[in-house]
Image 1: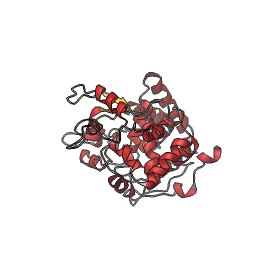
Image 2: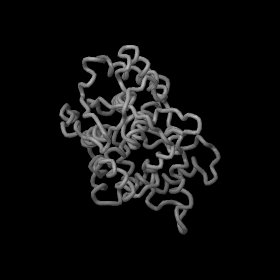
Image 3: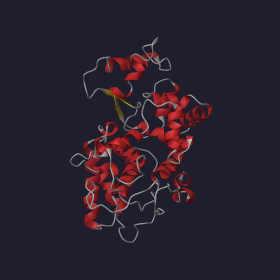
Image 4: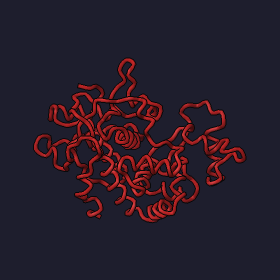
Length: 316
């Protein structure tokens, strides 16, 4: 199993079109050797009181990387009339920013002005997976923090209503393949969705049908009971798979049973290539973990920042 988590050299050298510095697993070995332990401890401490922290950190990292690269811009606060990414519509439900704040504070006490917020977020996302029973991996480091964060840029994030063509375009624009799309979608094994993100599948699906016919009927009925047509409970929703706090391959198994939450999940079954990958990952947790690790390293190596922020929420 150890070979699964060996970082592949080509992935380490993966770069976006933005000006970047090549990432390196050993980047902080000399100037901040206790970095990883410090971040892991912050994530562990947060998980003691909030079981949703791992899902939140993984989603936060994903949403960061898909806009201007993994530069920590999702962490920046809005200022005056300048609305930041975290306040864009797709990011309103992001939470657990305090975990990154706590980790950054602890790291600054050890190694002032050395470690970027973007690297801390990448490490925290890895820890979120590993501490939830998923695979560990070596995180390439050396990202810089970005100075730009615009709520309008969140329109670039792949939406839960996307079809396979829209998903493919979104991922390919970031140098990510269809294999990466299917593997990274497995991150939905952790987390929760509010009704608004899947309402389109269970009410007024089209002019003829009320419910998406690709959904398991009893599953659709259970979702409709939680999310009625005129739902007024803002917190209403459902977990993204049956083992919401455990990182496993249940997401793919449920997808094949017609029990996926988002249209974008169901879309993975609409091409032979992506459907074959779903089946592969459903039948082999090992195959899923190997693919997920490689795709996470690839995605998190899209960089583009310029500075080391001293406060993750504020540009220096």
